[in-house]
Length: 557
Image (tube, rainbow, N blue to C red; front, side):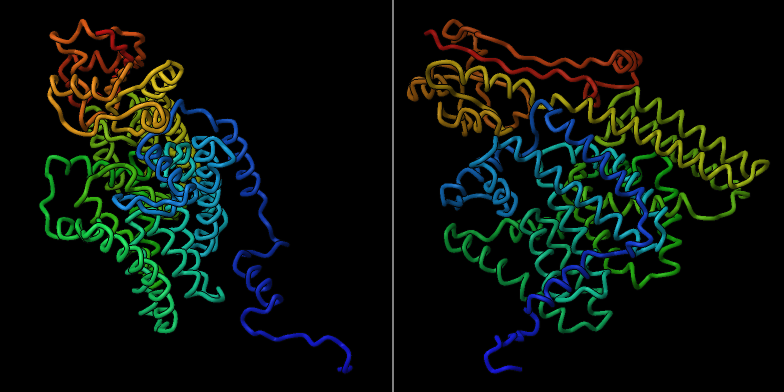
């Protein structure tokens, strides 16, 4: 080399050329010459559809508004000491808050991570099956799954969490990933900093790495994961004097009793997680087929699925806890649907009839969130399922198997469209009344008091008043209102499980309040009411009859 020529520095692992080469290697999963355009076209359609529905929901649900409040604190350089919220999702929200409306930014984040979930699901399905048809069907079934269809349209922490779960498994199953331990540890850490279930990724990944004897990756993953977690836990312990929330809940999760009155709901959710009454049958077939060939490959995934199902069983069978399982159940469903097997045995139609009966019984009696949105969707899905069973019986006697498979896939997809659309439409107006009431009273002059556990009122009215945070009797509530110079009161029945402003309904104080405006949303299903009259449904198990209201009162006394 000429003495005056600049010397190229070799810095090994972190050289620019090597970094670019490794990054390309990580995100390439198939030869561009054999590129299948079905998935990119499907993805483009999905993104377009999601953009059109960006403001479809009237309001957001769950803890989203509480996350927004936390994100707002982060933008001012503060992170509350007494909080059981994990920091990563509020941090993501805080990035966009200075530039966009908080609700809109949350929905954009959900869209971006949902697209990422579909891409990673497709790539993992390719790694598992080496079959693009199975991978494409997996993504299609995931898109139509009632849980994914609902939650991906919502500004929730579920989409980022599931994305990092899928990314962790993708990085694990890509054997040629450079800096594998670094990426695995970082991805698992971000999942754990988004939702507490993310901690389950560590034992799942470690089991796989131990079987592979990847000791260096194990030490790297543990170091990257544990150091930030210990710092976060230590901060909480020092500032509050209390152990982290996860440590407090751990004994209850491990040894606490299970509420048997919710066991039926748990069973319904597990059996019908795939989004179709016969889904459990096809998932079982796909899982059995996969494990018979590649048990060791599936081991980390099986550990994660088992831990998740155990956690849900011990905590609460709410639909949001199943989010991380849905992509994998969709894969096994696709694998089972496209598997070659004999239909000449009568046990398949018999099992199908049993599953359908369980679906009908559960839909009418218990109304689990993602099994059915309305009675109409339950009836429609039942009809599609009966057609599948009918075709199954015929296939075992007269019709060639080649006719059965495409017809089955067709009716499964059709049922998915009905179920997911029904739930998305049905849940469109959750928190609608409290949101509209908050926006309405925001236009009024004076201070506002509210009792609202949703966080909606706190987000919109945080600069204009005060929320009731303790249980007070009506006399104490009246003193509290006068002490805080309140001019307007907002009451709601939308998820109001905490302290409630009941003084406005008290006969003694009724003359001191004037109803300014009432916001209500009634979604009475005539079929559901008819079933109630017949004694099939009772008031306790009728979430299909929606009667939400929020009221704004002016204090005149």
